[in-house]
Amino acid sequence: MGPAGPEGPQGPPGIAPAEVEDMKKRIADLESEIAELRKTLKEILGPTTSPKTVATSVGGSAEASIEVTPITKIVVSANPGARISGTLKVQALKRLPAGIVEAPKVVYQYLNIPSENIAPEDVKSVTIEFKVEKAWVFAENIDAGTITLWKYDAEKAEWIPLPTKKVGEDAEYLYLSAQSPTMSLFAITGERTKPFPWLMAVGMIVAIILAIALPIYKLRRKSIPSPTLD
Image (cartoon, rainbow, N blue to C red; front, side, top):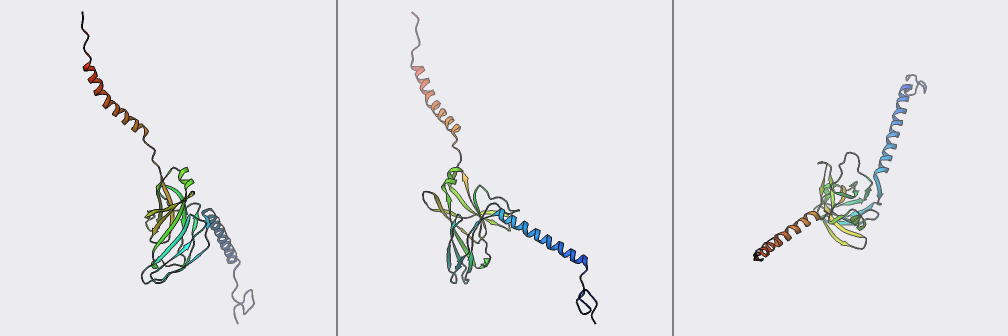
């Protein structure tokens, strides 16, 4: 005959009231952590695209058109001998997660491209096409030639600039393209235009004028005859 318990002689051993209370507390703590996580995600995540399916041939590439975020298209290229089949999505971030340093320069947008079901070792490169509002460029006094896509290196805990080039523009946007070795956390940034050094320029002009005018003045002084006394 089995040991006696709340469920009868043949039932499993009973659970002590203290254990029940401990389990309730753990569940309450877990629910609180989940609620806090949801709150944090809501504070961090901005617009998120719907998943886009990409499938490459062996060593080939595939592209996905993107909407909602500044990224307009992603082209994924597979390593030789590898085939990529999975989904992509882009998350615009309102702010960075805790523990990640701010990107250099003036930030236009932080973006996350998670590689949830694409093995990083299968990826040869990722070409990212994106757009930047001209209104932001003018409002922030940005030098358009300095707009760059940066990739966050989690191992080094630093931002790495990616080769970025302008590919077009229209009345509202500048269109650019950059190449990354992997999918990651990204930042679009630009540098403010350096103010023209007016004071230095005026000083140089004055110096030039003096350099030209002073010899002429001295020459004219020498050519004027001295007055004579009658």
